[in-house]
Length: 507
Image 1 (cartoon, one colour):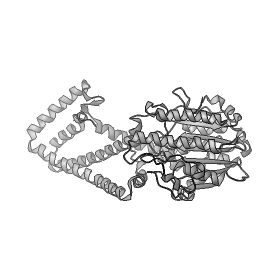
Image 2 (cartoon, one colour):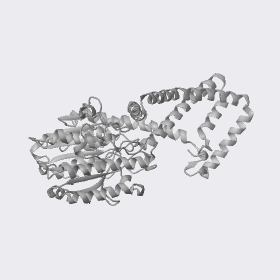
Image 3 (spheres, helix red, strand yellow):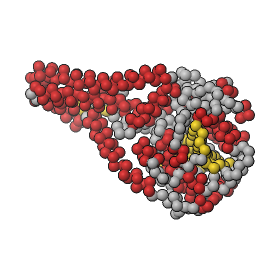
Image 4 (cartoon, one colour):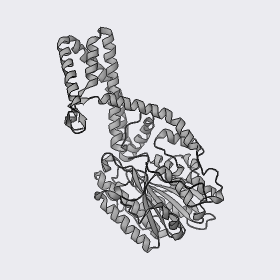
């Protein structure tokens, strides 16, 4: 968006001008109006691309991303209030309607000017075509990476058309992938045999990406993990860490959850919907089949969530089910510590006839990172009113600073939970769902996220010795990187009797 990037000669404009000069009256007006309308739609798509690159690190998907508008409205409403969200939504609708209309009217007006000054316009267009060709030959640039001889609009249209084609063909390919599942028919008594009697918690940490453990600006997060690993070791725990490549960046947490739990690469909403309509054998199904009580905890869900049945959860806790009465923290309806506390009290306190497997979707580190809770004494939590004290940050906090505080809070909470409640039968896997938005990471971030396994029982750690994961909670640049979809098969193979051992894949 540098000013110099706008100093370009668009080939499409030259070709359109030449065509308009060659056409007679009525056909010229039809072509001008149609071209202006198309140009307006391209502008709208480019604006969409800018927004999606800044928040999700990818372009706008013309087929699938319309469904995200509802989620975007909910996010804005939760973050800055419903009236402001409505005002923004109205502005977006007006933009979508006005841009194509105005560009069509502008192109019609310009076509009349071309005809009115036909001789001069013809000479200018011919000269510019020659200049464009020379600039293209010499790859002339004013701004690095931006050619003055421009044909970007055509490239944008081509890329999005090809994307539409890929979405259409991918549906059939994905249905074939869903049907290939080596674990679907494994008897329950052969699944997860090395974890019998253990309470297994799988915690997704919102926006916890590789940058949190590698960017020098987040050195305090890395120190927290190092110190936490030391404290856990003093308490008898051991930890191992690596990286997974997430299918998404900046948002779309549900895609990462589905990928890890299903063992399939779910990188768009079409695949996600197809997955939910299938009978894919998830990690939750595996634990349930092997005799565990399976639980889902998602404090950000505030309505019915039938997906819980697909993931194999016998018990599901959404936000309203957890009884929180304290303050709200930006997007997060409650602190992660409260959600973990309520899960523990309801599922792990008192006599139980079965061990528990739980998925915990932790959202205190969800953008916009403007208000972050403090960790409190677990005995003081009660209904959450205690969290009105010690709020970190203000609505004017910078994104990277707020992100650092928020991720640190959730990691500190998990470490504190293990120190307070962890025992010989506790196994905690916590993993990032995706990198934060490019406003934190910069452009073209790595899609990798840290993953950690913590347990007291040395037999659990011995089982994963051949994974190559590094000791402690701070994986460095040499730590193994698997694709997130390879985790399910590797986990089920390592901790039970299963089909031939799969290899973790890099993407």
